Image 1 (spheres, rainbow, N blue to C red):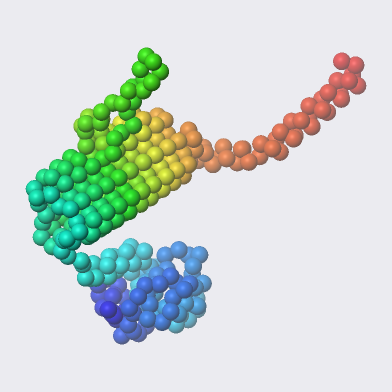
Image 2: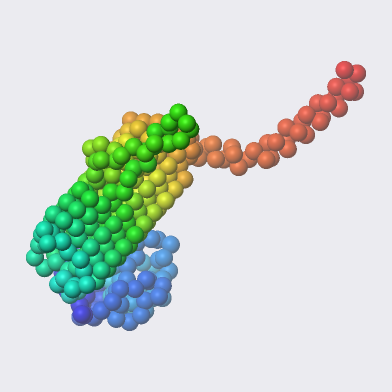
Length: 348
């Protein structure tokens, strides 16, 4: 499929600078682009590539100025990165979608599937499952008894959704996702063994949630583990039993959230962050990578870093001190030697 610069500008509400009729058929990074491709500039450190790229069209922000002639056609938009995402979503949605149910899939006779669903080879769909319209289920997916899945959700290979869990519409689950496995609940016994606590709750995932590869969401001990609408979790995120994640929160890879912790809405969490159990975090909080949180955060919009966390400005000052500790140690050692020598000279 090919689109002209003017067609793209009309779709994005942008303005063309250059050849309005030039056509593109693919996306490319600005440093690797070739003729017939469209790219974008959002990070200023890539500005030099604008003058060198072979791309036919470049999306740029309205307010950016260039001091050299540019060979490519520009489309100016308020936000180049956001416009690229919108354009790529349109491109992806225009691809033909697979439909139909494989004869190699196992679908229980009581399961109800909506219109235009696709179920691939070796998928398993259990009893009393309800699946909405236009859902795509790829090979080796397991959908347990009594699960519900909303419209337009995509479930990639080797995803497991345990019994009684509820999934909303327009969700995306990447390979290896596990939803509804048992929470980590064990009670110490008198003989120093551990007795398993049955996990009888479920998981509720609302609309437009995306879970990265090998992310796990444990079922609740009682009640529900809840992921609110619009949440995006990266690969290998662990969500423990009875956790609640507020709407439109985004969390990077290898973060772990302990049981019964409640994260606010619109949070941004870096990679390898650890949340202790039974704490509450306010809305709009930002947490830097490899941080550790073990207490409630009540301040909305706080920017935190470190383990245990502190505000970003304090952490930066502390990190400077930490970096200077070896020099400070050497200075202290030298001063102690000089003080000792002075005492010896004074006869003390």
